[in-house]
Amino acid sequence: METVIRLENVVKIFYNKKNKKLPEERRDVIALGGVSLEVNKGEIFGLLGPNGAGKTTAIRCIAGILQLNSGKIYIKNQELNKSTAHVFRRDLGFLTENHGNYENLTLHDNLQFFGSFYALNNLEERIDTTLKQMGLLERKEMKAGKLSKGQKQRLAIARTILHDPEILFFDEPTAGLDPAASVHVRNLILGLKRDDRTIFINSHNLEEVQKICDRVAILDYGKIKRIGEPSELGKDLWDAQELKCLLKDPISTEINAALSKLDYIKKYKIEDKNIIIYSDNIDETTPRIVKELVRLDANILEVRRTVHSLEEIYLKLMDEEHLGDQNGF
Image (tube, rainbow, N blue to C red; front, side, top):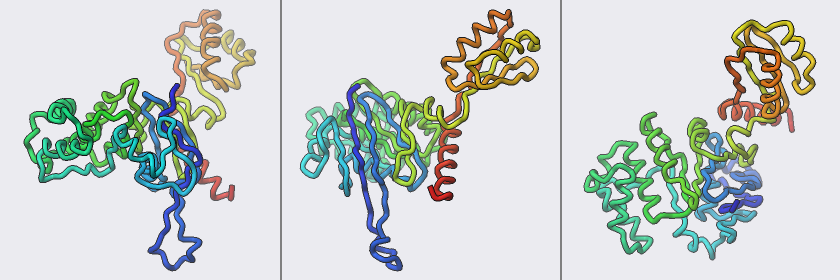
């Protein structure tokens, strides 16, 4: 799998000039405290964290807007620095948290202005194609200030993809939008995914990240706490994984006795027609349990593994980390 973005021990520190009550050595604000991660070609990668965690700083560093204090960033295996930042500009599309549209200009003129930065030969054709893709073509000659919030965000996305970049950055893409507009924008982002395009999303919206991201990094206080697929992030946060089997009939003593002898489950409990099984590796345990129940002539109605939501994973991880901070770890 080809790596498109790589961060190696990235540190970004801001100097707080306003707080003059503090001595100079304590005015440093560490936004990123040694962040390392990789983003693969063709995936949607989400950086998740609370406000102030360092998400926007990270995305601005990767896009070449902010300079690092230390560490390295590579884009397509080439190091990003002052002399190379302009080389990547054609390959990047960056949507900031504030849409940045010129509200007194028409949609067409907004895109024409931003498109002129890239010397596109077929700019007018690209404008029409992109507006159509965003569902805004019929508003082409309308001033951007007259659009709804959701439409303004779609115009901002149109501006971001107009030059057909290989890497897209979205900073809080649905912030401030109503539920319907948020769903629309999420679907548009999913529609932008393709094998040769990588999408990097900053968000504190757990539902958004879980629905559209292939992999997620959880960032807190400028440090990465977890990286992985949303479904895999919580595996080691709980003592055991859970499997529920619903049978048609109450659990027989024969089934109960057989379960008590299985050495590949940690424990189990019976609630009327339900068997709740706890295991260290539910992927391995589930087929063995089903085979055992079939052998015992159990009439199985449903087998369901408990999958912790990203919200549960996130809250548990944050609770554990902050508890550790309070205890001095």
